[in-house]
Every structure is written in structure tokens, then in C-alpha cells.
Length: 90
Image 1 (cartoon, rainbow, N blue to C red):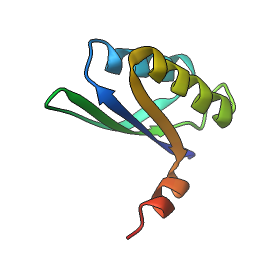
Image 2: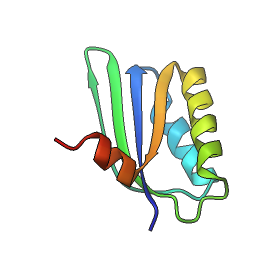
Image 3: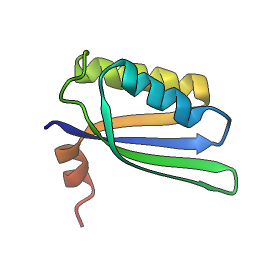
């Protein structure tokens, strides 16, 4: 399974979760776990997803999610789980 980590950070607004989840569903990416919080108007969401059956190349998914984030006023990043783990190793 190709697991990915998706993070979304920015000012809270209506529809962030719906837009991100709709995009993932449209491209056959299954959400395995999700956590989100809002702290003094700032939105943060982290997802673990299975991109094994995604209908697009990973780099294109990353570009499109970045554009989606721009339209929503948030930053969306998608990374392979292995890269995320190495970057956040203490």
C-alpha cells in the first residue's frame, strides 16, 4: 500500500474538509485516518491516505492539491509516508 500524508493549514473557512475529501474521492484516494483542529481561527488537518489506486501520478496530485489550497486560502501538502517519516525523525 502506498500511504501518503496530507496536511492542510491555514485560516479557517467553510468547505475546506469537503473540498479536500471530494478531490481525494474523485481520484480514488482512500482516507485511512484523519485529524483536524481549529485553534483561534487557524485550521489544521492531517490525513493518512491510501493512494494505491489513484488515477493520477503523485506529482500531478501534489500540484492539483496545491492549486486547490490556493483557491481555499490554505496550504495543502501531500508526501509519501516514507519521506514524511524521515523529515520528522527526532
